[in-house]
Length: 257
Image (cartoon, rainbow, N blue to C red):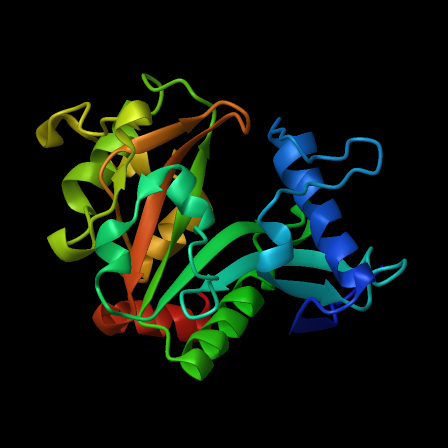
């Protein structure tokens, strides 16, 4: 039997079904698969929600060839907040983990990315590329200059993550003017191994695909990691200056290779 070809479309969530599909996919990934939890997670309805959701835009990828309702067809999600949409006195989600003063004072147009996930059936295919293409169009439309957001390693065993965290610190630290820092009360240093002790090839196997994709596009990380026990993750803050995208990164974004 010939595998069914996906019929993708991408849009910002608009309807109750859109939001429901996004929250359910997030539950499947962040709660059922990765063991996370939160105060507003609805385990009975299998919806992953938090207090930031009503204020953010939600980019959703649908596969219309997938059986079921439109909620069932949501196979990819990005949660978005531009600095020009952030209410006066409000905070970005990332500010619960990182001091974003340098970004906020940079005077540049910011876009926070979060809750990025793809349905398990679509990983390794073109779904992530479709989301990236939609994100690139959104960035161009709104003149976004700096993208940022927390990304996660599964688990909270720092010793097990010493290699990848050290690699990120030594080789991918954000430039000073954009270098956000994990809050002092939860700051976890990342320079756990000397650079000459890192086996880059073996270490990169431990780095989640999404983080590797950001690095290939020229992304960098803030200083320090944040241990999120509720979500059973170790978080880093990724920062990407769109003006500094490497030519190799641009080619990657174009072909999704």
